[in-house]
Image (cartoon, rainbow over all chains, first blue to last red; front, side):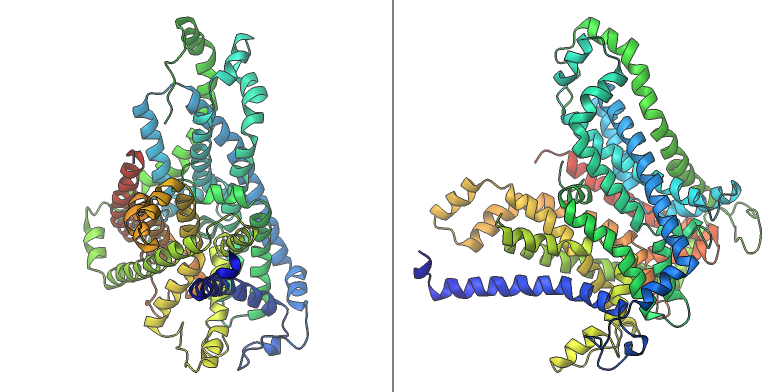
Length: 282
Length: 305
């Protein structure tokens, strides 16, 4: 069969390969160039033509970053925010979803709840950022990681609840009925019977939450200034400063991007399910 | 949506449910409920209140009083507001057109379960997982007009690249490029999943009837994909309109006001100039449009296709 392929088919296959090759390059070249920039000598920035292969690989930008107490603080804050947001979101979101799924709500009410989730996912968040800033100012929480964490919870909890609600609704109730006969309480049923089954979905939700929280910028930048600032703000900060520090900016971006790429490679399925959730069912 | 509440539950079971289960279930929902009300609904009401107030933080520590719809009237007539709306429409419109087209094409080109296609798909979705701020800085490096890689590659082709980030029109194009680079994978993923779920026998039947590949796409697949494509379009439209991070790190709204989007404008008005009243009013103008779109998505999702 293969030998007899016509010239036309071969030309098509070639075009197919070429287009996909270009698409892959369009993704890879920018990423590779960023990494290259992060190990370039300062004098090789802004050269014409741009230095594509640096004469020497230097890690000075990374060293400078991590010797700077500011960067260490950004990194620590980002980790703190991500861990807290993910932990609290997973616990309260999963519980809430289970509660909603088993409460025997009418279809109408469930539709209303779903609409609220959809609304929170997509309304212009910039609307609530200003009042949220004022509330945090009132509570004297401005420029603390707590202000960022609580603000992010407002986004991630409804999202995870929604995600898990769909999972619990698809779970046949018969699975729990055996335990019900044994007189197990809701808590026991949830913990012993339901949770082990839905664990993959819970991990998916956790990965997605960590991803959203780590990359989040709007809330963090509106309630944090100096003490509580996180990596996303630090990356953006290189631009607003006068005179861009190309090396540190590239290095910082790499530091920010790499964990998520590793996530994407190892937990691709979960991450994709989360990101496309709502557009694709389940 | 499966609602099997009534199926198989006897009277005693539902009695058990009411007395033993329901209190626990309610308790499960409480923490999430409190956070959502405190962090989403209270600020939402607060911002509606702010939109009717005259309050600039740099002039006064407390609201200066009720001004009715004055903020709204002022904002609608404000030239920067109007410019931001225009920019938002241009950027989101341009980016959507590009990424929908590219995404659909790539979804077809990367079909299949071979390891090669899976590897290509894994690679192609990477831009989507990068933090938008980082993607912005990355493209800021690439688009540097003198020493950037993009203009260098263009010069190899004999094209003199434009002043990407310094020229008002090209800055808009730059933002479109960035959004397209980052979010085409989303369209690819969603459409790819949809194509995979089209039953093979439909396509085979079309092939047996002698339909060309293009005609099969146009008359068999496209109608099936249409609802999902519209949904994806609205999804991406909202997310693109709401994004702040990438513009913040790519152009910082500049040069001048030439890449101020509606979100960016409201953000700077509220949290850089601290004009709370005006920012809240413009955000509510934005909200009306967003809510209509969300309503559309909701209506679409609940229809059985």
